[in-house]
Image (cartoon, rainbow, N blue to C red; front, side, top):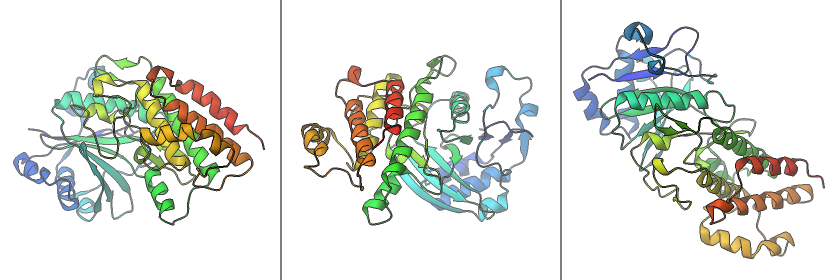
Length: 361
């Protein structure tokens, strides 16, 4: 049994593949992979083994078999050593029914995020092809979080991505509601536009389906505030693009109810992405954890909100800011229409957001 950790994207030197032996012990460790200590031991074992260039190991290679990736990632440091991994600080920062998210800080300050998946039964070759195909898309957009590596073993399936010190949109909104510095309206609008552009990039993927990996490439599948990473300039990148297609079926999470009828990865639709985007917008406007009942109440109270007879926004909004916020609220209500065919395509949303940005007092 061989476990591989492949680096993405292809850099100027070479792409690394790591072998992991003594897999019986590795699998025992994997049972408790959700703990920081276990994750650290897994990584240490991975990086301890001799490294071989993938090209030298698997010659000749077909075009489809190469470890590929395009664009650039924010972390360009060399592969960490065994000592660095042993001395790394690791912490579980998220967990749901599909897996866990771990932050790893190396002694040199380099930080990465590890996404570990549960319920994966597909073969290593298929898993690798899917991750590499997703990385090609992610690493060629300024609005998607880059993928830098992945690991596959019998019980461990990991994807490594960049870390964003500002955290997720969910973190920022939660902090603001707990008394920390809240986002201003211009900052919220910047984030909304960034997310819309990320969705636009995804929905424009052609061909929409990848025959070789049997994946839908023009659907994200899991848009929510916790999957929106924030840059220091308050622009945003959408993470976890296509990750839902790395697990065997869609498992409903407590923090992301499938209200839009997404279903499993074989039934992903762009209309569901639009619905989820509408929920994120409502979250940014001040509707924490929006649900269908809240959306109905907002529709009923829309005129009262417009006439300032009812408080709605959780931020100061006057003049131009309020006018823009009301326009964006209308976008959110259109996106969350209960009829999928009534939801606007992302191209139309982007056009309307441009009008919002051009709005004067």
